[in-house]
Image 1: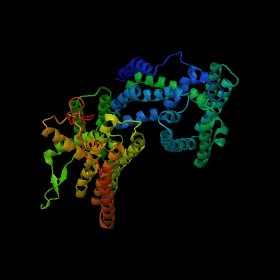
Image 2: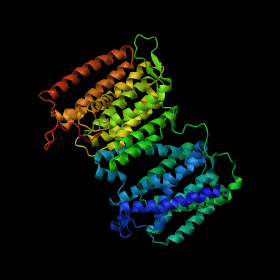
Image 3: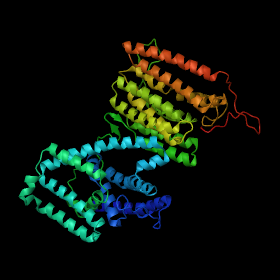
Image 4: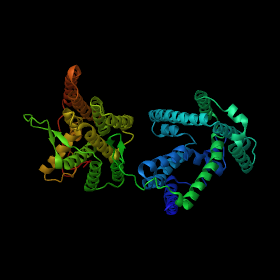
Length: 577
C-alpha cells in the first residue's frame, strides 16, 4: 500500500508539474531569455545574482518548513491518511504551488519588490496598508508560536540550541564567503555541511555545550527576539538565503528517508492511522458546521464570470450546495408560529425542514446576487446584514457564529472602498454568490434556535431588502408570463436609476433602508432599557432616512427605459437574471 501511495503521489506531482506547470508558464509568459531584476539592478546589496541551487534551496526551505511537515501529520491523525494525502497532492498542484509561484513572478515583474509594493502599484496605498496590517498581525502569531516552540526545545536540550546557533553563525560565514570573497559554492557547501554534521553528532559529548547553552526560557526569548529582528533587516544574501540553502540539504535528506520509508516500511505500519477517520466533523468550528460546498459556489461564480453559465445551471449548483449544507447539519428545524393566538411559539417543521432550508439558502444566495446591479450595493447590504447578525449572535451567546460573521464583515469592509462608484474592482457572481451563501447558512446556524424565538425574525429583517427585491422579481416575471429566471429591469435599484437618480444616490437610499431594518432586528433581540434606547434611536433614524429619501426623490418620476429602435419599454432587458 505504501509503495503504491508513493508511486501514485509521485506520478500525480510529475504530471502536475508537466501539464499545469506548462499552463502557468504560458499564462505568466516565462522565458529563459527574460532578465531578472537581480541581473538588471545588481548592486551587491539588495539585488544579487544567485546560483540556481541556492535559489532552489532558499525557496524550498522557506516553503517546506515546520508547517508543511507537522500539518500533514496532524491532519492524518484527525481525518485519516487518504484525505490528507489527497489534500497535500492536489493542494500543492493547484493551490500552494501556484500561490507561491505567482507571488515570485509578480515580484520579479516589479523590480523584485515585495507583494505590498505590488499591491500599492495596482490597487493603491490603502490596499497596501490593509495588506501590511494583515501581514503584521499574522507575523505576530507566527513569531509567538516560533518563540514558544523554539524556546521550549532549547530549554529542554542545550545541544539543539548549540547546533542551531552554529547553524546561524555558519550561514553568515557562508554568505560572506560566497558573495564577498567569491569562493566556490560547492566547496563552501561541503565544508559547512560537514561542520554542522559534526556538531549534530558529537555536540552532546562536549562539556562546554551544556555550560554555555543552558539558559532559562526568558533568556532564550530575548535572544531569539534579537535574532528575529536581525534576520528581518540584514541583507538576504548574508543570513536568510545561505541559512535556507544549507537547511535544504537536510530537507532533501528527510524527503529521501521518507521515500525509503514509504517504499520499504509497509511492514512497520502500526495501523493506528485509519484511511478515513470516523466520527469527525469534516467542516466544523466548535459545534457549528462549516460547509465544503462554499468552494463549489465560488467556482460556479468564477466560471459564470468568464463564460456566462445558463441560469438553470447555476440554480442546480446552488441547490446541490444547499443540500450538502443540510447534510452537514445546517437545518432549520423550527420556525416562529405566525398564529399569534396559538399557545405554541414555534412550529416544528419535521419533514419540511430540509426543503425549507434548501429554499432559504438558495433564495438568499440568489437575492444577494440579484442586487449586485450597482457599484457597491451588494457588498454594502451584505456588510449591514453581517453587522446586524453579528450583534445578535453576541447577544444570544453564539460565539462561533459571531466569529464567522466578524470575518465576513472584515472582508466586506476591506473590499467596499474599491467597489463603490466608480468601482475599481467588481465582485461578479464569484463574490455575490459567496456572500449570499455564507449569510444564508450562518443565519441558519445562529438564528433559528429554540431558546430565542425572537431571533427567527432577525435574519429576515437583516436580509429583508434583497429578499423583498427577489420575491417581487419572481412574481413580477410570472405575472408577465415570463420565466422566473428571465432578466428584466424591474429591480429596486434599476427603478431608482430610471427615476433619474445617480448610482450613488440610489445606493445610499438602499443602504439607509437596509440599515433601518437591521437596527429593527437588533431591537427585537434586546430587552429592558437597552431596547428602549434602541427604539428611540431606530425611530429617529427612520425619520431621518425618510426625510433623506423624500428629498432625494423630490422631482423624480419613474420613466422606464425605451428601446430607441422599437420605442418599446426595456422592462425585459437587464444585466442580472
